[in-house]
Length: 194
Image (tube, rainbow, N blue to C red):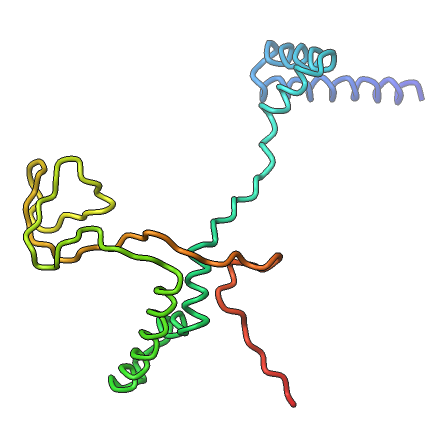
């Protein structure tokens, strides 16, 4: 009986020593083990140290991505509601004749134009007529003027105006109702039986 207890004690000691040895080898040696113990003691004694360790060792909590501003989506929703623009743009038109598409486009064009005129005030970026010769000055805004063709050298550039561009002077879109999801551009429609 005493031999069995002695064997058990020796086995436990050998297991603990072997376990510590494996941990030491995996962790970088005795000096790393002692350093870890010292850090653990310091963290137990100092809440500031414990907080710094937690900040370093634990990944930050995931942050929900910011929701985008829904202004552009509200305009797109208006174009869908009034002119069914999204339905048209996302429709597979291969089954329709050119005449059918043309008839649809006229109605969509008129209704879309009304939405834009009612909610957005536009002006040309450049006042000249298309086809006119224009000079692009030094320091021009590349978000307002795009150079086409053989672009070499430094401004000023002289060329032919292909499109006058559009700039929004103002817009007026109603804010969505409280609780309305701006990401829904057009609600699903379900017809119930009579």
